Length: 131
Image (cartoon, rainbow, N blue to C red; front, side, top):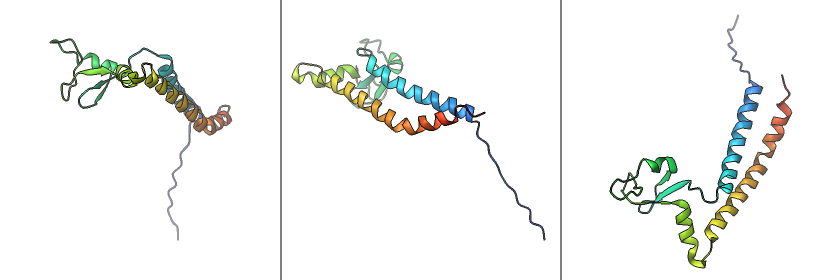
């Protein structure tokens, strides 16, 4: 009585996993740090009517030849820079409360992310010298 058993095995390329995960973590941190560093850079545009968001690159192709403003491809509403919208909402006090609040949220997010990634960083440090 013989039985045919099939076994499947897999192996992990630790060097590649190490590089990929470290790179992804670096990109996540860099994205938040870049947002913190760019005080006046417009990252996104928002439609006034439907609140659809566009990146600066996407908005560039939506410029109208009639009035030279950016217009939403869904509802043709005018697009405003997200930083302008934040500032307009925060102007009730006459200062940049909205912008300051946004920066505080980004700092908080960065700290929280670093705390959550700490166990992963510790595991990566353990495998970085494996052959």
